[in-house]
Structures are given as C-alpha cells and as structure tokens.
Image (cartoon, rainbow, N blue to C red; front, side):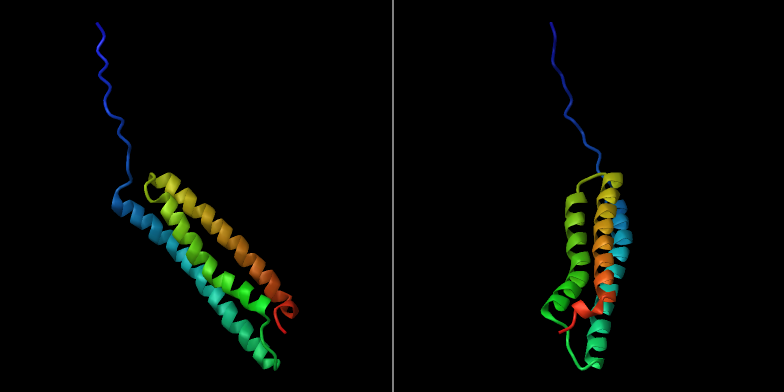
Length: 119
C-alpha cells in the first residue's frame, strides 16, 4: 500500500522589486557604455572633419557597434535573466557587461589607430 503523493515542484522566483533593482543597476553601466560609444562617434567624426576628411564606412560601422552593442546586449541579457533567481540574473547581466566592455575596448583600440577609420 503505497500512495504516491508528490507535491508539485515549486520554483522560487525573485521578487519583482529585486529583479527591477538588479536590472536598473546593471542598466546604468550599460547606459554609460552606450553613452561613451556615442561620445566616440561624435568626437572621432569631429576630429575627422577637422582634418578635412570623413569617416570611412568601416569607421562608421565600428563606431555604431560601440553605440548599439550595449543596448542590444542588455536587452538580450535582461530577456535571458527575467525568470531566474537574483544570483543567476545578476551573473547573466554581468557576463553581458563583460562582453560589452570587451567590444568597447576593441573600439578604443581601433579609435587610437585613427587612420583605419578615416577615408
């Protein structure tokens, strides 16, 4: 006489306020990265115009990636971590921030070799 009474598995969910707080805190870092990418785009475009030339197509592409990548990666990381607990959600957002930082560093390296970005 065995009765199989298994209780439904309950998953712990992060409270909405904690999930929003984590997303907002990481979102500030992503926004800073996007803002610095926009500053690079404007600054290097002005520097190129000061030299009576313009940015090449490659230059525009690299600099636009520096602006758009933080927004896209944050959206993807937020979407992947939306139904997870607080720890995994923060780790996903942190991994995305590391990716954005690596891309920003690549943009800075290309920006310092300014000759490859101008026509």
